[in-house]
Image (cartoon, rainbow, N blue to C red; front, side, top):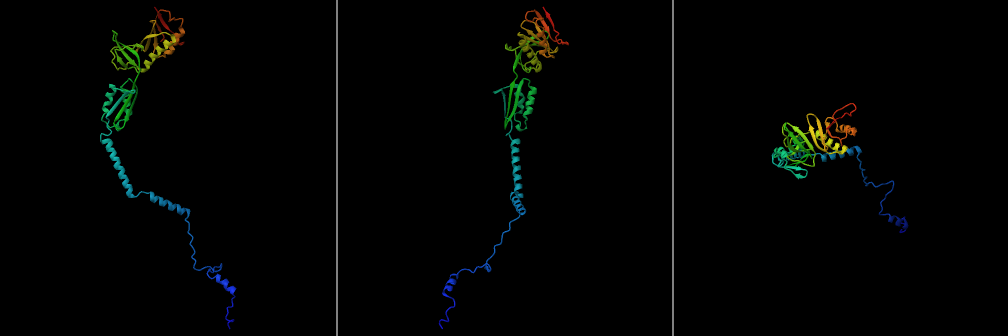
Length: 311
C-alpha cells in the first residue's frame, strides 16, 4: 500500500520544478494582465509650438496698462523739471563773455560793445552763427572770427586782426594836409599818427580827413596796389618808394627810386601793363634816361602802345 501512495513524479522532476517555484510564468503567449502600458506623449506641431512661443513672449514683454501710464507720467515730470531749470531759472543765463585775439585775452572795445547786450540772456536761445555774422558785418578789421557757446553760462569769441600792410598818407582838401595812418589788409585804418618804415607808402587824397577805423580802400584794390609794386620791383630790379591811388580816376601811380612814375589802369591787370614796359626796353631806358612818367594805361590792338615823357 505504501508503494502505491508514492508520488508518480520522480525526485529529479520535483527538484527541477522546485527551482522554478519563484519565477514568473512569462511567455510570449501569456503576458501579465496587470502590466500598465505607458501612454506615449504626443509632440506639438511646429505651427502650434511657434504660436505658443509667440504668445508667451508677447505676454511677457507687453507692458501693462498701469506701467505704461506710470512711465508716461514720469517722462512728463522729468521734461517739465528740466524745462523749468533751463528756461525759468538762472542756470543757463550768460554770465561770462570771453574775447580772445588769438590765444591772448582781449579788451577789444568794438566787439565787447556789440556782445555786451547778450549778458543775462538765455544761452540756449542765442544763435552763435547770428552773432558771428553780425560781428563780421559791423567790424571791418576782423580777418578771422569764431563764436562758441560754452554751456551753461559762457560765450567765447576768438578773432584775428588783418595784418598791417602799408602806411597810408591822407592828403586832405585843396591844401593837401597830411594825415598819417597804418592800413591793414582789408583797407581799414588801424593806427593814427604812426609811420612804419618797414611797410610801403600809399597816398590817397580826400575832401575830408579820414578817421581811425575807417574803411578807405577795398581789399581788391589794395591787393592790386601792393601786387603791382611787388611785381615791378621783381621784374625791373628797381625799388618803388611811393604809390599814389587815384580812386575816382581808377589809376595807380608807382613812384620809383629814380623819381619817375609808372601809370597803371586799375581796371586792367598790372602784369599785362608791366609786360609792355619790359618789351619796350632798351627803347625806353628806365635805368639811364631822365624820365618824368611812363603811361602804360593805353590799350591798342597790338597791346604795346606806351606814352612817356622825358625831362
